[in-house]
Length: 457
Image (cartoon, rainbow, N blue to C red; front, side, top):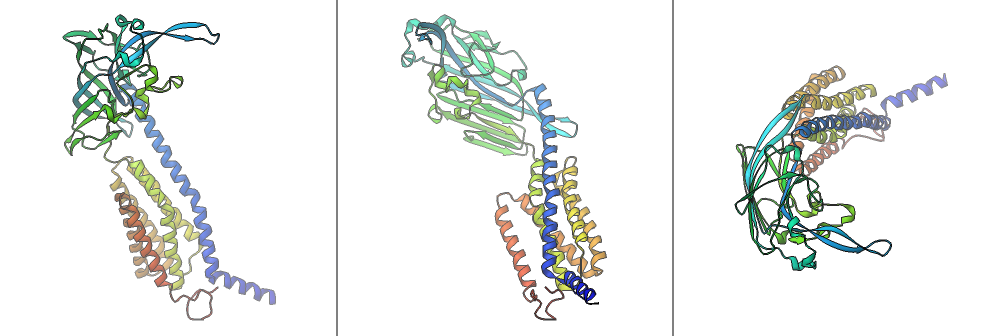
């Protein structure tokens, strides 16, 4: 009889203990970290599938393009000692950048679809002109007799040659030259075209050529002139200006953008002429076009909404949403004598996690805002109907539903206001904590008063 009484007392304490309930809720929250982390992995997996689709389409049309040049490269004979101490000779190149470089053109975007995924492609038509007014050979400390002026080449860097849509004809001092694929040396560019052009060290050269180029997502330029001027127009309304320099002038509207850059040689960290060493350490085979320190700049054609980025940000708030919902359930127990089983807590937690799965799945087919609304209403209806059977009190259920709706609206606001997310989040959490402190100000956590709280420790 005594054992039965002790068991009944323990059972009654376990059912009414605030401390034990808080411990069980904490354990449930920790368990729900598992599906929360799985949500993050699911979003990353879907994003990787999207990226694979984008890369597949881009690889057939043209990848991100970076354009550099033209550059005059003059071979010269260099002598050096080999490992045995004997003198040997090899052919190296001295490179000369243009004094003036002007680029203008249009970027015509196009959306292609691979399954449910959108790929942003473009065709750009550029007119490139400029001048080589002097070749400062003396600054390189190479004997003039070692230069092979008759074997000089002019090269243009194009990061993905697959995107070239038309043959490229160079006009130099009213003489036409055809650009050929391949480069004689990869000191500067890893990919591009060139043609042989014997030079006279005292001559000045004016060049012009047109470039019809396909690419995807981004278009960049290398500031190779003593003064580099780039001017672009496009009907794309959501550009992102990337690289080392922002445009000096830009206009953006729903109908497109115009942008212009002016970059001086003093704005970059390499000279107008040099041998293979002026573009970096030749031992690691780096080149200007692939190295960020060489100040590439340009524009990226962004999609208006990246649903995966916003869904990833949403999932980060999942555990906070679960904690606040559980606290709402908990204080319903404390203040309104409604006992809720841990299994019921867990089911509500799973419903919250399911909201993010719905958000991810629907946003792949509809806009993110509409997907959020559909997922929110569906989850809100599910939890509200379930809470009604738990509370058996319509006003209490309505109050709980309103609180959930406010939470969904609050977290949606955090997603929209990126610059003010920390401020809004801090204020919101402060108000939530203040509300909890106010509601629990008279709770007898130690059970010293019989009528202070329906739950006792």
